[in-house]
Image (tube, rainbow, N blue to C red):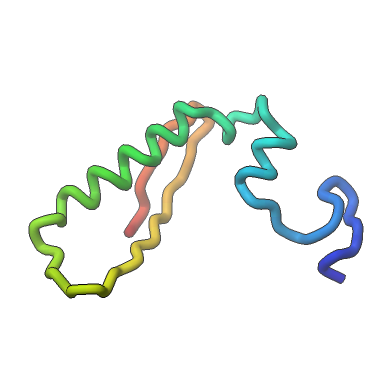
Length: 80
């Protein structure tokens, strides 16, 4: 039933961030300030380990970030 029209979200079960922002431009999660804070956390955590990352030639690593956003758009890093 993935493509079934569902109440409130139309077809599909998940929205991309772009689709969410398009539908909810005034929602706090669409705030550029929030995304600047998230990007800063990601950048600072990667900079803190940059010297320890080995050169693996053509390989790469993926990092997953868990964060919490509070009601004041404060971003709290849980784990990487």
